[in-house]
Length: 198
Image 1: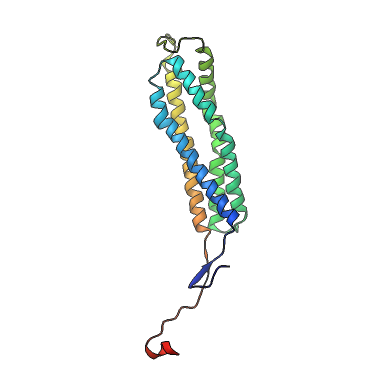
Image 2: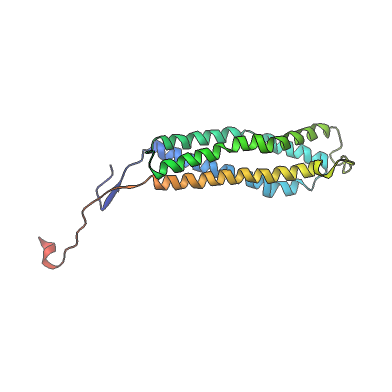
């Protein structure tokens, strides 16, 4: 227990504080990474001809692919933080919610983004031998199946992952704050005049 001032808090072990900080920071980082890929990088990529776009998207996708492991690792951190809380506490419920949210990014990616990722990888393979500046490389392809349409769809779905990670980070931050609860109030008294002197 901490010092007895007006009130005191239960001391949170340093390892738990570090775990919470790492988990929240990593979830916020993944939210920013996903959002910037969709909001900043994709509009720039969409200006390229299809062969170059497919190649650039695949490079971006390969670099971002390991984030699935990070989503699960962060979920494990938040699950561990929940485990040390009382099941009836708000911190427990918030950490569990945060862990469920961040790990849901993996099935979200596999189920909702998987078909688009597969189609874009196939585009990257089929356009690999084309000149990267060939603007007519996809002549005759249905508009919804062009590399540009697929990358645009991917970017919209990727914003969903950013929202999942951001929400998880905010819920974990709320849990972290609510885990610091006042344990006991000390005695507070006001005295006036000569009573102060004993």
